[in-house]
Structures are given as structure tokens and as C-alpha cells.
Length: 400
Image 1 (cartoon, rainbow, N blue to C red):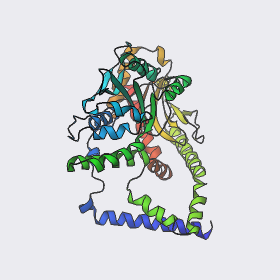
Image 2 (image 1 turned 180 degrees about the vertical axis):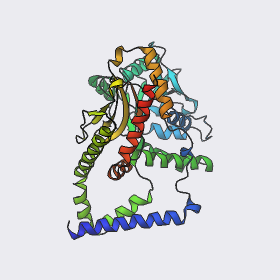
Image 3 (image 1 turned 90 degrees about the vertical axis):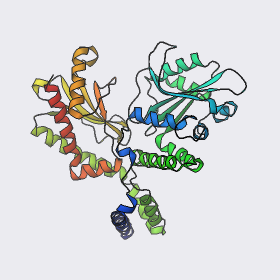
Image 4 (image 1 turned 45 degrees about the vertical axis):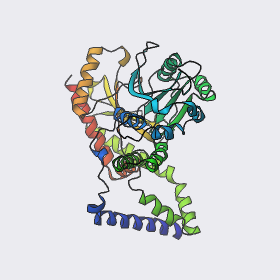
């Protein structure tokens, strides 16, 4: 390691320790870890409710249509909304797709009348902070929207946690491209909402609403960017840009990040094999060193549960969006009443409601800042947490 690289790491480490000391010293005055989001569910449905209420011109925030106007300015067809009466917009969550009889539920549905006609424009926001798409999901939403709003007077907003594209089984690639060309589709991420929330804070005239917007902003920054404290990146950037030696050292370190992650995943793989061997579980299809989407591993339980197993899978490249899933042999043809019993047992064991997908009989999101995951691999905490989850799932399955 050259001297400039070693000096940079030392300076950054010292700066982080100083920040941690300052946070501890002024904790009573600043309460940096206190947030309303520590006390409410932050699952997909609750996040949809929060966003929908902020977008509602008649919402409890009492700020009129300004939040909605600022949000619409981010979409690919922003100029369209200049002719709409935003103050009369109707917004609801879990809107059923009754026109095409698919009986799906749109996370957020917005209907906005035109200023000079009886027609209205429709917006469907598909909120995917953690989960993957269901088969034909976006296709069904588009069909529903085209029946409610003719002549392409509709728009689908695909809101994701990490910028992943819709899956091919949700909408055909050629059809998605057609929507984009007609400006009927916009893909945005939760980090993109940070700029929207900042604009909302500037326009907001109520202190309590302003505080909530700030808390929501902080939650997104921590949950989806892994940044615990906004002062940290500023201090680190200042150190890096202090001189050319520091900048060169930072660029050199950045080239090794993927190698570091691969090495840590190799360590996790070794830890998993050792822990599974203790429990007489079989680990299979372990491809953690591969950073492609859907990399992960599966664990097969003991012989009396040979039809079941559990695993970890990253939904995006570079180890983003981890989920913990439960698989069942021949799941698609299995007894529905048995699946219901398994669902109840798993929900009770893990104190959270599982979801289902094409590939996993049941799965749970593992929501934690990315940096925290790597630290937990190095100190061995992640493998212990996974073993605790897997043991609870095994116990739940044994009760069936």
C-alpha cells in the first residue's frame, strides 16, 4: 500500500471517529437516530399511503397541489400536466383493476380532470421498494388504464428502490419500449424522490409537515443509499478533494471495491458451509461470488423436511436487494390448503408476513443498509442472523 492511500484511509477513519464522538456528545440536543419511521411499518403498502397522501391536493398536509405539481415535473411527459386541473385530482391506494377483470390492485391511482374538457388523465404508480414484479403485472395495469383513459391519456410510474427495470414476464420488452416512445411510462427510484422531497420542503409553509418531509427524506437516504448521516459523505468528499494525492488514493481504492466484495462473499460462503454442516443442512447452488442478478444460495433442510428449503437471493447486480426465500418442491402444483398452513407458520415464526412469487413459494425482504451487510459479513454477524432466520423457518415447517 502506498503512503497516500494509507494516509487517506487513516484520515477518513479519524474523521468518522470524530463525527461519531460529536454525535455521542450532542445526542441529547440532536437526537440523530430518532425518527417517526422507527415506529411505523415501512413496507410497500405504508410507503404507498405516505406518497399518496403527500400527492393528494386535499391531503392532511394542507399544502394544496404543490407537492403533486413538483412530482409530475419529474415524469417523461411533464408538459402534459400543464392542461390539467391538479387541484381537482383524485388519489387512492389499492385501486382494483375492474375494467379488464384482472382484479389486481394498483398501488397508487391518480385521476386528474382536464381544465377545458370532461376527460381526465390517469396515472398508475407501481410501488416496488423491495419486491419483484408479478407475471403480466404492468401489462394488466396498462390495459386497465387504456380502458379508463382513451387516446393514451394515461401514464405508468414504475417506482423502485434501486432502479431495477420491469421484468420481462411483467411486460414484454418491445411493448415497454413502445410505452416509452409514447411517453406513457417513467421509471424512477426512491433516491430520485430525495430531490422531490427537497423541493417540497422549500415550498412547504407548515413546520410539522416540513419536519415529516425531512424525516421521510432521511429514511430514504438511509434505507436505499445506506447513508446514516449526511455529514459523513460531505466530510469524506472534502478529505478526498483536499489534494491530488488524496484524490488519486481514493480512485485507486475504488477500483478494488468489487474485489473486496467478492472476497467478503467468499468469506460468507465459507461461513455458511461451516454453519450448515453443524446443523446437518445441505447448502446447494451457492454462487455468491458471482455478482450478477439473482446470485445467492439455497439450503436444504434435514430428511424429514426434504421437500422444503430456504435461501438468499440478490435481485439486482452487485449484491443489491437481498431477499430470503422459502422453496417447496413442485410448489405450483402443491396443495393450496397446505400452502396456507405454511404461510401462517412462517408469519408466526418470523413475526412478518411473507410474500409469494413465481420462483419462491414465500419470501421476505432483508432490509438493511448495504454498508452494514458488508460489515456483518466480516465480523460474522450476518451468517448468525441468517442461521437464526433459517432455524425459525425450519421450526415453523416442522409444525405443519
